[in-house]
Amino acid sequence: MDRSYSRRRVGARGFSLIELLIVIAIILVIIGIALPRFNIAQMSARELAVQNEVRTINTAQVQYQSQFGRYATSMAELGPPASGAPGPAGADLIQASLASGDKDQYQFTLTATQQGYSLVATPKVFNSSGRKSFYTDQTMTIRESMGADPANATSPEIK
Image 1 (tube, rainbow, N blue to C red):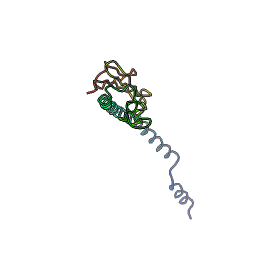
Image 2 (image 1 turned 120 degrees about the vertical axis):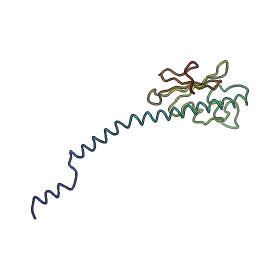
Image 3 (image 1 turned 90 degrees about the vertical axis):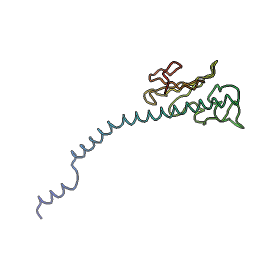
Image 4 (image 1 turned 30 degrees about the vertical axis):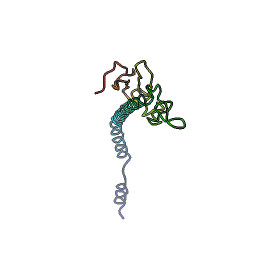
């Protein structure tokens, strides 16, 4: 058998190191382009979920106020009771995961005010967990802030 023929045939069986490095480089470039867009899409989805959670809390506050004659002063009061039947200390109007005040990589802070309540939802890590914070109160208007400062009563309204 001709030696040059057998060498050619053996060399044609696989990829060279250069070809494999080029393929890996192309894959890394694609990942480098796609990953930031994926993270932005994830943050946007998380922010939309948080807006829905804020609406849920507003609805729960209206139900709590109609049942107990006042607004809840903490997230725990809206959540499931520690034991026994629902009552003012645990009305079972929202899920336990939300009642903990920590959901979707956001921190929810409910505060009693003279007029009713205020709720602020802030990302745990700004620009990683989310780029927006949210504010609402007994008016049920949801407001947002695009900066690192938490949203408040003067922030722009979400339409």
